[in-house]
Image: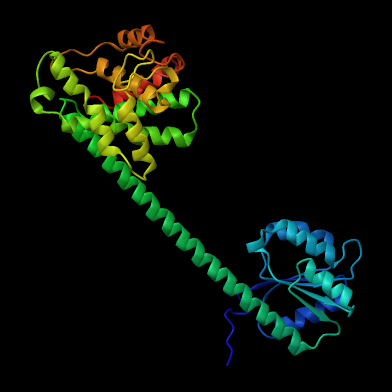
Length: 354
């Protein structure tokens, strides 16, 4: 025995007919089997406000009405509801001709019943369409719940990836007597420069996420060099410079967008705009934009941070040096972007003190 998927008392039906007697008959027929939430409308011009204020599970609609006929109402329903929100519509009409039937179905009707209607037929068709409608809404709700779970799982995976990147960046900086706050500051300053230079949200998000790994290659440098106080010999400096290629090898061939950008940054953040940097001696815009941005953020933070071998520079002194290196060490456009966000950078430095 078939059981409805819904309770008649729970569903909302809209009845539209300009004839008050017809409305009363339809209303009484539905009410007799437990339908309670019935809205009857004899003037179709009132439908816009009614449809804006309420949602319905099924519409019973006459075709022949003055001012706005049933096809006009069908068009209004199509306009006011998204496809997945559009309730089934049963046309009730005295016109029993194939042309109107075809037109009704073409314009969005779900069914077509001629007047005078058979009471049992009407109730059965109403029940079947409501069953289908309720099933569709349940499936839609389950789909939305599943999609939200997928989004939550994706967010969790992205957060875990960012956490791993950040912690790996911290591990590399500890080998250079630097703190985890160095990579945090560099990443936030790089993001601020990228935004000031006009790059979109996605790129700014990626450069913030990837830049903590700019010196990951230091993991491969001997402690005798990494922890040496004072300056390096030429041979030691040559070995020290190899951290960029080591970082590139560590980060190479990843399918992750973040690690791909981190690979690019690791290899190029010691290049100089004038071509005198390393490892490839790239010039100007041959250097990827990510490397040019992180070069400014990294040098600025190195200058303004205290180390065992140096005191921290005041911010204004560090900014002056970077401005002097405009067109030499650094991209001129990015230096201007950097200068424009100095107030924001000062806040970052205060928030993430060593």
